[in-house]
Length: 115
Image (cartoon, rainbow, N blue to C red; front, side, top):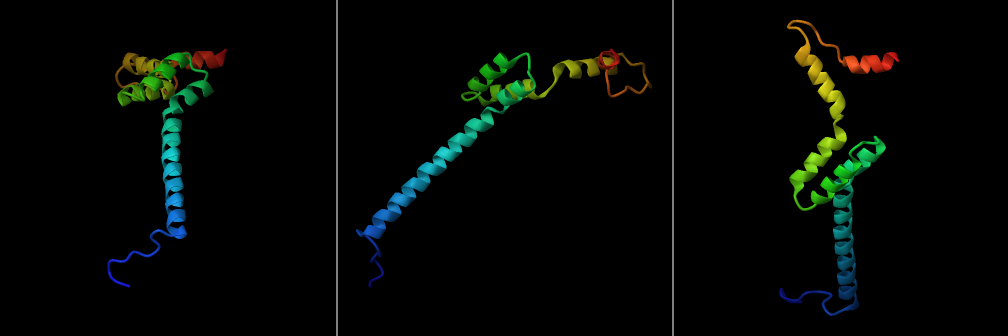
């Protein structure tokens, strides 16, 4: 056998190895695309679980996010952050007198719990 001879060329083993490599390649690409798609669907799934008011907006932003990824980041923000509670908390911090500790719950949340 010389240094330039390649074993298994033009044999059945060579063909089988090429077929196996092709199947592994296709499987890897398909798994990667599926994983990418499932990752992009996270905002929609979260919005449905929380019964979010803006499910349609989040869905549209997620689909646009396939082309422009920065739009997907906005969809994630809208789906995962409770803006109503966050804005109420920010309002309470802003309106609190200087030196007064602000509780972790907003007044609106405390009133709704009292009812």
